[in-house]
Amino acid sequence: MGAVAGMNLPALAYAGMVGLPRPKVRSARAGTCWCNLSKDWQAAQASQLLSRTRLAWALRCEAKSRVGGLG
Image 1: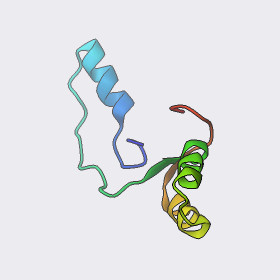
Image 2 (image 1 turned 120 degrees about the horizontal axis):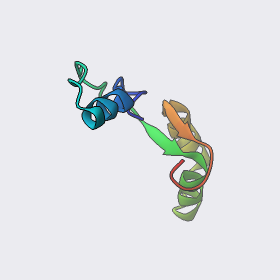
Image 3 (image 1 turned 180 degrees about the horizontal axis):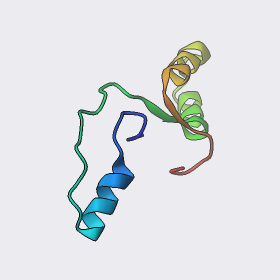
Image 4 (image 1 turned 90 degrees about the vertical axis):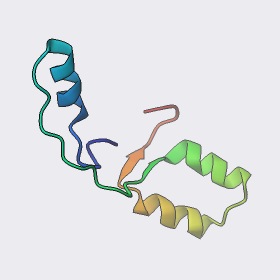
């Protein structure tokens, strides 16, 4: 998600771990959307959201997880 929003989180973490100066950080792009397709679909069905509404939202998400859990 961080990479999709324009942040290099691994570079920040690495620099912090090895004591290097942190790379310049630019502002993250606001409004980036992430979804977990399997978990979100189950939640949409449980709350009886319309299929078109759910599909439109999922298609707008820039980052998508295709497996259950946190992946």
